[in-house]
Amino acid sequence: MSEESSGLLRRRRRKNSLFTVLLAIPVIIVVFILGHMLGKIFINGVKALNLDFFTKAQKPFGEPGGGIANAIIGSVIVVLLATVISLPIAVLVALYLAENPEKRIAKTLLVVVNALQGLPSIIIGIVIYSWMVVPMKSFSALAGGVALSFIMIPLLTTTIREIFVLVPGSYREAALSLGVPRWRTTVGVILPAALPGILNSTGLGIARIAGETAPLLFTAFGSPYISTALGKPISTLPLIIYEYIKSPYDDWHQKAWGAALLLVCFVLLITVPMNLRKDRSKG
Amino acid sequence: MPSHDILHMELNFPSDHIALSTKNLEVIYADGARAVKGISLSIPKKATTAIIGPSGCGKSTALRAFNRMNELIPGTVTKGEVLFHSRNIYAPSIDPVTVRTNIGMVFQKPNPFPKSIYENIAWAARIHGHKGNCDELVESCLRKAALWDEVKDKLRRSAMSLSGGQQQRLCIARTLALTPEVILMDEPTSALDPLSTASIEELTSELKKDYTIIIVTHNLQQAGRISDMTAFMLLGDLIEYAPTKKLFVNPEDERTERYITGRFG
Image (cartoon, rainbow over all chains, first blue to last red; front, side):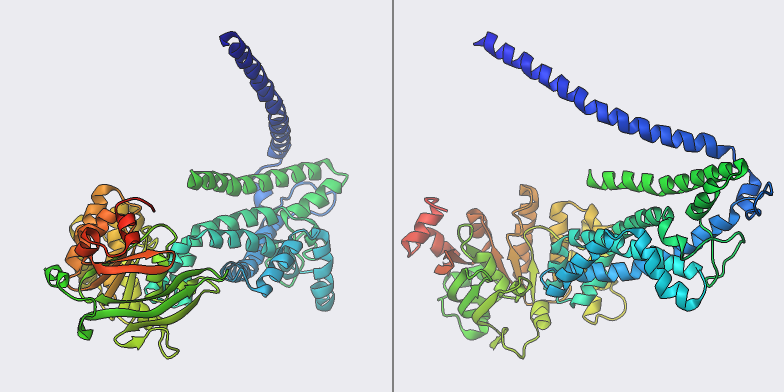
C-alpha cells in the first residue's frame, strides 16, 4: 500500500516538474522577445538623443541636424484632442449601459461598441478622411484627433462600463433607502466611486492611441513644421517614425529609432504603474 | 420600559399605538414566485418587532415592502396595502421618496458610502433640504448611534476605515439624520462579530424609546433578547404574531413551536 502510494507520489512529482518546464519555455520566449525588442530600441534610439532632438523641428531631406519637436508637440495635441472628445462621450455611454442593462437600446449599443472596437484602424482613417479632410479641403490636427477618438471611444466605453458595473449595488440601495433621487446617487456616489478606475482606463487608452499610425496617415498627415493650429496638418511620433524609417538616410533612421524610444518610454511610463496599481487593488 | 406594557397588550392595539400596518400584503417577483402571500399585521409604535423564519420564508421581502425597496428589483409586483399614518404607501399619489425618508432602512451588510464619516450622514440630509451647518446634525446622529466617542476625532476620514460594527452603526446614524419614524433592519448583525452584534443590540433597545424598529433576524436568541413583538413567517405566510415572550414560551401554532425549538429551519 505504502509502496504503491509512494510510486504514485513519484509519478505526480515527475508530471509536476514536466509541466513546470513546459510552462517556463513560453515564458522565457516571451520575455526574451520583449527584452530583445526593448534593448534594440534602446541601443539604437539612445544615440539619437540630444538637446536638438527634443527642441528643434525636422530638417528638409538630406540636411543634417534638426529634431522631432514638431512630432512631440503634434502627438501631445492630437492625443489630448482625442481624449477630450472621447472621455465625456465614453463616460456617458458607459453609464447608460451600466445603469440600464435590460433595455434593448443598451444591448444594441453594446454590440455596436464592441463591433467598433474590432474595426481596422486604417478604415477609421479613410472614413474621417472623407468626412472631414475632403470637405475641409485640408489635412488637420482636428481630423487626426477625431480619428483617434474613434479608436478611443469604444475602448474607453467598454472598460469604463465594467468599472461602473463593479461599483457595489449596495451603494445604490443605500442611497435609494435614504430617498436620494437616482441622478444624485449617480453624481454623488457612483461617479466618485468609479473615478480612480476611470482615470486608470483613460491612461491606458492614451497609451493605446499614442502609438496609432494608420488612422493618422490621411487625417493628421504629418508636417515638418512646429504647429499648434488645429486646422493644419500636424506630425506625430508614429507618423515621423513611419516617414523617417522609409527614407534612405542613416541620420533619419537613427532619429526614427529615437522617436520610437521616446514613444515606448511614454507608453511604459503610463501602463506599468497602472498595471501595478490594478494588481494591488485586486489583492 | 415600554416592553412591559406591550406584554399585556392585545394584538389589536389602539390605532394611535400603531406605527405601520399591512393588509393582505403580497409580493410577487418577476419570475412569478410569491415571496409574501398576503400578510396582515400591525406594528406597535416605539417598540421593536422581530420577524423570524427560516431562509427563503419571505421575511426580508416583507420588510423591504415596508418602504418600497422592492421596486429596485425589476418586475416585482406588490399587492395589498401598507398603511402608514392611515395612508397606503403604495397609493399612486404617494412619492416613494417621502416614504423612504420616514421609514429608514439598515441592511444586512454594512454599506456606508465611500465618503467621509461626516459626509455619510450629511450628504442625504443636505439633499433633503438641510440648510447650512451640518456639524450639529452629524454629532447628534453619531451620539444617538453610540458612535460619537469612537469617531469624533476622525470625522473627515473615510467611512471605509471603520470596523464592520462601526460601519453598521454609521449606517444607523445615517438613517437617523433623516428623522424617520420607523427603522427597518434587515439582519443587521449577521455580518458582524459577537461584540459588534452586542453593541448593535444595545443600540436598538436604546433607539426604540424614540423610534419604531422592525428587525428581520435569523438569530432566534437575538429576537428573544431585543424584541417586544415577534412575527413568525413560513413560506411567505405569517404563521404567528404575538408578544415575544408569549411566542417563545407558549406558541399557539405547532409550526412555530417546531421552529423555535430547533426541529426545523
